[in-house]
Length: 480
Image (cartoon, rainbow, N blue to C red):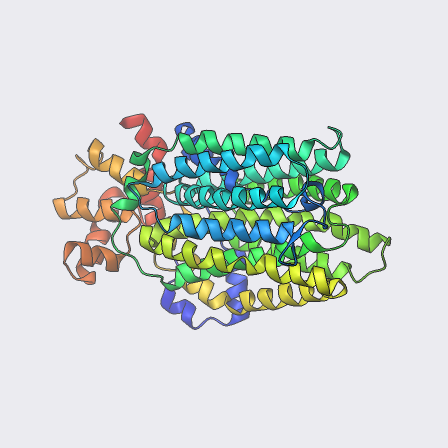
């Protein structure tokens, strides 16, 4: 394993190549069907992207802003505001209340025609949908393992892409958009009502965390992918039937590509991040081509890579926050970052209203700058994320819950390990670094490394990845 100290000296090109070659290791056997309600993160689905034309016309405005901008802003503000009043113990209760009010606002809105009152109801609906999204994001982060996160994001992306195709083809005579929304709201309510407080105890018992570099880097990409993607929603023709069909068809292929990259080729999530940026920048650059040209039409297909950015952003957020975060840092991030993300709607919304001809240029420049900064931070991503001291368990299966099962099952007994070596092994399986273990057990780091070396020797393994493989969730299910 390449050490963090070595990565400090890496150049940007060297770090980029190192990250390009890095791999993840997730397995389908780690999926738990009884956690399906946390995998189906319906409130987080990019539901209104490219659909504003079908839901509201541009004639319905409030405070000079169109419905799409107002509803997107309400979603972001609701996500931060409602989550500010929640904690681990009342998370399930807050989820249920948000779901009920969301449904109560949605039903009359669905039955009304376009008007200022219907827009106000839509804003209330989106506000509480944002609250549901915050709760779903928390469950997605702390109740799932890496494989479940990947598949959860992939399922929602597929659901959205299929909607684009069917809506674009007008297979249900223009009724599909609201039918789809109704199905999404119903699915959200069912899943949120199935949340169990006991599934969040892992987050409650975590040691106090701080917003360290790994979390900051993850949040950068999470917010950046919103700013890059949302510009397309306001571009001319984004909601046209042809554009939606092209976007959806490619989106499904992209979801399949993302799953294959992770499950088959084991390519690092870093590669998905870069593919997303390159595709979106290419999309905006093609908008400088003549309307009706082949290259301009190709932008509609290329934008389908938005699904890869969505999957990468939520997968990376969940993996890193479960490793390094706690409820306090998660709440702080949502309360501050998500409301701030409403700028991703407001900025292009204002441009679309007052300077629509500048949208392609603004989208290209914004995406280009964000991507350049992302590449310039390659050494930091290498040092603090993909090749950090703890990266072995990031690449491997999620063993946080497995460590607790191992302790209860007594699987470390009769292996010739000393009591202290068992303690160290359990902490390693929970994803702790040598420094964290030394603080937990009140011993020096050199002593921790001594115990690690001895237990590896006794178990006939050479690194943490092999330790995870030996005590994977599959093995536990066979032995508990």
